[in-house]
Length: 260
Image (cartoon, rainbow, N blue to C red; front, side):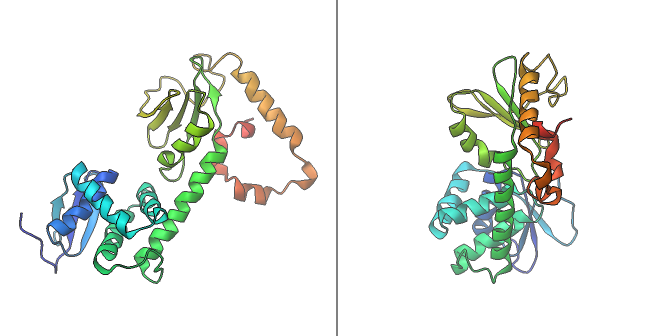
């Protein structure tokens, strides 16, 4: 393959995975590419003025890039890059590539916020971190007839990979599923390991009274939970604006205490 000219933009087409993005970084150096932007096959729109190059995902190449990043970044910095990938923001793949090039080529510090790409990585990582903390607080499980605790989420960012270890440690003695209905995948914990799953729903998974899914006494537990929140709430101290700021309305459909 002929290396692209340093004067022209190259669009790297990858599979959208984390390892695929790392392989984009590998290819930038392997083929001595100049300016690049990154896109998935689904998002790519042909551009007559740019070269395109498909990136093939290789575990070996991805691990080499990871090893290199670990020498340049602290654990917090590594987590920030991964969080930016999970943000799913269209521009972040290209930002991560530019950021990696800065790290490898100029040795820039991960705290050099005067650089726009370093600043962007920090800002987006904080946004994803806030969403991760919200999911830890807002997830509500319901018991199914198979004795599996089930919860649905629709986070703004793809934070499910970031909260699995928290729930695995907290509910180590219970089988559970956390399902991201927005992205169509979930994680199942079987008391030993976790695995990614996809479900084919024949009924509405968010109806707690559906006798085809949930345990017979689940509706009673839901009622008790609602009553508890009703009785601990003090009307004279209610501050709706503050409450909505901490618990945005977009999460309410998944909160038992908010269901009428």
